[in-house]
Image 1 (cartoon, rainbow, N blue to C red):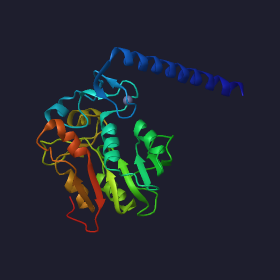
Image 2: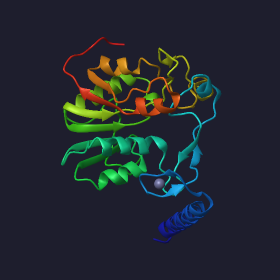
Image 3: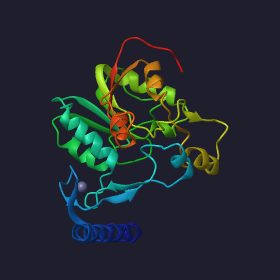
Image 4: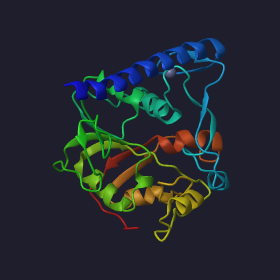
Length: 267
Ligand SMILES: [Zn+2]
């Protein structure tokens, strides 16, 4: 008992200090960054600017990588939501995608998006390979669920970590019901026609050099859509701003992927 207390007390103290720290930071940002230019759709606070996020890595800059490179206004100073989860949230709300009682799988869940989902009248399942606080511990190359089990899947910034991403896509396709939808964001280079990957690159240093992050195994190019189609998905790109780098983020993230019975060319 004494030993257990000795272990728990520092942990509880640490958590308490962190809570106080983040509360202080939140309210100081509310004051220091006060303004009207940016509004967070999650917490509804407005600021003159958001916090930066992403890596200033050379390969991201060279490949103009969207969704992974440095962004100067990406994180809400109050709730810490990041740009990609705010975009998914707005897309889901604007398109009224959360029909009552749908069974939704959220892989590697973003915190604010997860909080929102849990308040909806849906059957929500969070999943992750390593996070112990999710509903299902899951390897997405081998999903332990029946086929056509989920009505919807959100899986953002996961596929670029997986060597056999085709297997992961096949599994996501398998567990999605016919007519279901998914949102599958990845880091993407609009100037690459073909995805940049090389499986002889295995060290952290090399992966960081070529893919921008030590645990990334590729940077997706414009063939990402065809990769999804090759396992059977139908891919909708939901806006037409492909030539404008500022809006390409919206274009590419907000694809809706529906199940199609035909299997197209393998990549
Ligand atoms: Zn916020």
